[in-house]
Image (cartoon, rainbow, N blue to C red; front, side, top):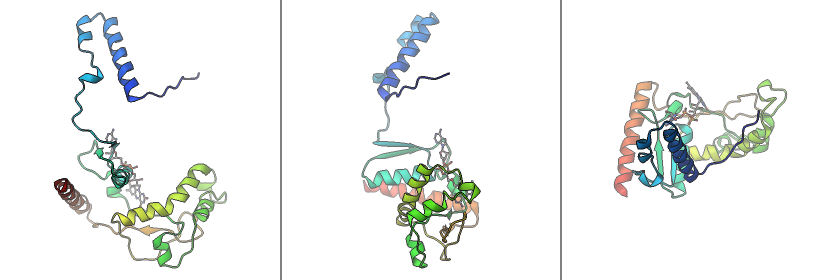
Length: 204
Ligand SMILES: Cc1cc2nc3c(=O)[nH]c(=O)nc-3n(C[C@H](O)[C@H](O)[C@H](O)COP(=O)(O)OP(=O)(O)OC[C@H]3O[C@@H](n4cnc5c(N)ncnc54)[C@H](O)[C@@H]3O)c2cc1C
């Protein structure tokens, strides 16, 4: 069975959503409910931004920083009571290579091409069936991603990078932990982010 896929713009979504709502209520014979059908014009938008990001985990927070770097306004929403997602409890092990500043500091030569070859190596069971296109993009983004982390305040333990994932050269850097006490990590980071937010709002 094939399913017809149709891309909906927000405008279309609202229009067809409203139409479906009206259809359903008329079908149920509840005429008064028609009057309550919501149209786009009825919606109050309390906040507006160029970019709205769902999820304040590692991906969402990096995306929000990138968006701000491009001078657009951003709203990040999270269903949790705090930001950080899984990154707050992660080991901070960053296996990015390709010639990062961290690798260069330890005299390690690497390239995006070598990252690609290592992560599509048929002799390594985990990578044998890797999606080549995806790995290509990821390999090319290793260095920019690592330098993005450095530029945005991530510091790394000053130990030489390690070989991981069957790699041909050392790549693993380990982020400096905030604290070994998870409670302190979460709460101190939270306090700092909250005060940084207040400070950046006050500047505007
Ligand atoms: C114990 C542990 C150790 C790890 N160690 C490492 C490591 O050493 N190195 C490494 O590279 N990776 C590690 N990882 C994996 C890494 O932490 C995750 O891959 C990464 O944090 C995922 O980030 P994310 O933003 O994609 O997703 P998430 O962290 O899951 O963030 C998603 C966010 O979206 C929010 N959300 C979800 N649904 C909604 C919704 N409907 N509306 C609004 N908000 C929503 C969530 O509350 C959350 O804040 C580890 C993970 C764990 C759990």
